[in-house]
Image 1 (cartoon, helix red, strand yellow):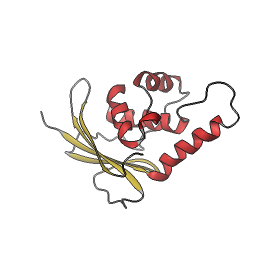
Image 2: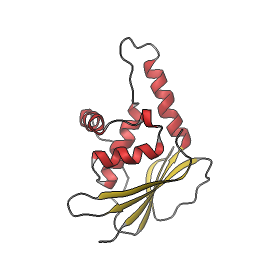
Image 3: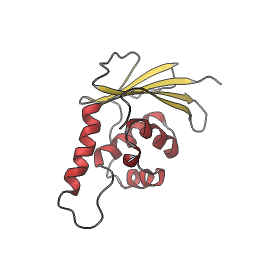
Length: 152
């Protein structure tokens, strides 16, 4: 079975926004602080909707984008996504990312887009190369490699 390469490009300003949103959420909170921002959970839900991978694989992908302490556990992701009022719209048109050998998923201020080609400025995006083995039941993430923008 062939492998598919998915390049994920996430704007650094959005990642910084997730961390800033978390600081704002915890500013006047009593008790145990929040660990994960709502924006991060919505991004994870949209990415899961596009890639159709398991929650464990989704955590593996997020660990390439974020520092280890900001990556939610797979059970936490599953519970938080299940509690969402309405799932976020992932992509405007329904696109199969496994149709081509290489696909680019871009998440920036315009939203999440699936493209055949993408050129980015390395200083603006954190980019991951995700190797996925498409499967009939559930796609299997083979490898996650940071192309640029190492997580702190």
